[in-house]
Amino acid sequence: MLRDILEEVALTRYEIGKTALDERVMAAMAKVPRERFVGAYDRHQAFVNGPLPIGYGQTISQPYIVALMTDLLEPRPDSIVLEVGTGSGYQSAVLAEVVQQVYSIEIIGALARAADERLRELGYGNVTVRHGDGYQGWPEHAPFDGIIVTAAAPHIPPPLVEQLKPGGRLVIPVGEPGGIQQLMLVEKRGDASVSSRSILMVSFVPLTRSRP
Ligand code: SAH
Image 1 (tube, rainbow, N blue to C red):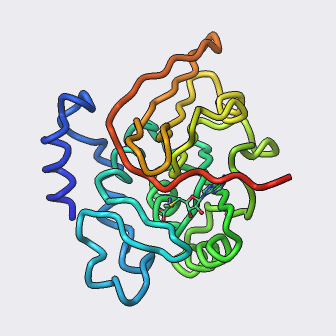
Image 2 (cartoon, rainbow, N blue to C red):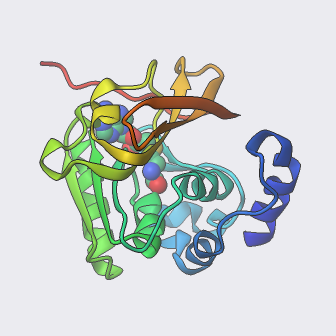
């Protein structure tokens, strides 16, 4: 799996503007047991470099994308990070290996409960999972050093930009569901001005919204 990630990094080096990913991120990818986050039926495929179903029509992203998105956050051991779209909890676990605290929101209750249980079984005490609509972020724990969204949004949610610390980074796929989306990196500078750039074309399940 690590070799596949390295190969994809090499193939996309011009788009992503780097030839290697953060060493701590690669060590986390090596450590987190991906097979524990997919159904028994798909376990033999857990290390294939592609997305896998996790139930409820949702998927766990391909390892390269998980690694790239984590790298783009520039995680530090003292970072407080928000994830929107807990899904299986795999991305949360990778984050938990490289930051201090992860807050993760999942809109499908059953997935949130299963991920929470799995992360606890695996000993990830620094991940807090909540069932809810992540479009609004998690104001009680804001501001965040990094925010990662693992479902495609039609636009960058303003509450998430608001909940970034100065110097913080938001990584999010933006575009139409089922269509081509751009993985965007949004940076809030020290003076609170915001810049964003597109990193790579990707394909994610859509960010859904809870109805009022
Ligand atoms: N990060 C996950 C992959 C998740 S797929 C993993 O590592 O397994 C995207 C997830 O986003 C799905 O579980 C979907 O239910 C969830 N989602 C979609 N819209 C959401 C929203 N508005 N708030 C929170 N979660 C959302």
